[in-house]
Image 1: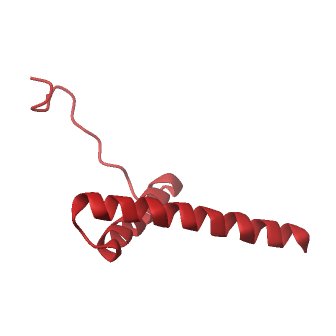
Image 2 (image 1 turned 135 degrees about the vertical axis):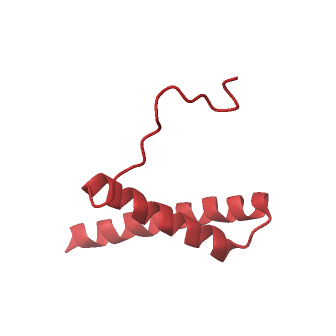
Length: 70
């Protein structure tokens, strides 16, 4: 049971850290926290799908330079 409590404490710590970082991003970007948090959740879900193979990551075509590389 102590192990479950340790996991809960660790999870709460991570959530607090993520919330703080999202608050900083929201303040810096001029968007509200809900928008930034929703984008974060969509990106996290998309990354999870890509890792598990449920979604294929887009592949850049070779030979095309971005405007930054010119």
